[in-house]
Amino acid sequence: MPRTDSGTVFAPLPGFRLLLGFLDATRQRDLMAAVQAVLAEAPAYHAAMPKTGQKMSVAMSNAGALGWYTDKDGGYRYIAQHPETGRAWPAIPQIALDVWRAVVPEASEPEACLINLYRDTAKMGLHQDRDEADFSAPVVSISLGDEALFRLGGTTRKAPTRAFKLSSGDVLVLGGEARLAFHGIDRVLPGTSRLVPGGGRINLTLRRVT
Ligand code: MD6
Ligand code: FE
Image (cartoon, rainbow, N blue to C red; front, side, top):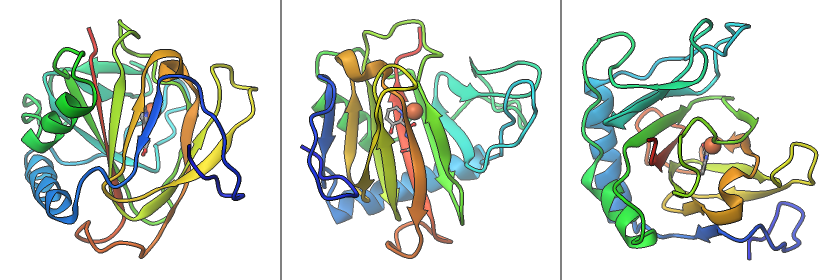
């Protein structure tokens, strides 16, 4: 059971799994190198929120058949090409596919790998992952680099929330009842890791989309 920022433990919704230190230092470095190769081909950008057009503080890119994207007019969606280069997204790094297979062996192959890059004071507001057609498939996330305070709530926005720390190499699964739990990143703790070149945190989220 996760230990929260206030030192207490709590029981999250069924289907929530936090695998602390799932990737050892070597596999973190190898995955980081693979992510850098993806970003060299598909540069990270600051996507804009629907309606307001407000740019997100987190920079994003994708790997896989489909990539999550948002802009002012089109809203949240999955697209098959990088919005600026027009090219197909690079393949999902093998280590990330291996994590998916190991932690959710019952699920079909992931179609999307969103890459979230947090520099400086970037954070992510409380949200549900609900732009996919099928919520029966879990979402698997892998954290690399600086530690972050992850906030997890219930399936309604007003349900109580708790924050706990995610560190480099941790893997988090939102499946079952937890698949639609609200969650976000309160803040990143700068300088807590040297893994990400230039500093900061990277989170990969693997998903089925169709
Ligand atoms: C992050 N993670 O850790 C943001 N979504 O940077 C997510 O939004 C997320 O970690 C779905 C499932 C797991 C996650
Ligand atoms: Fe999410």
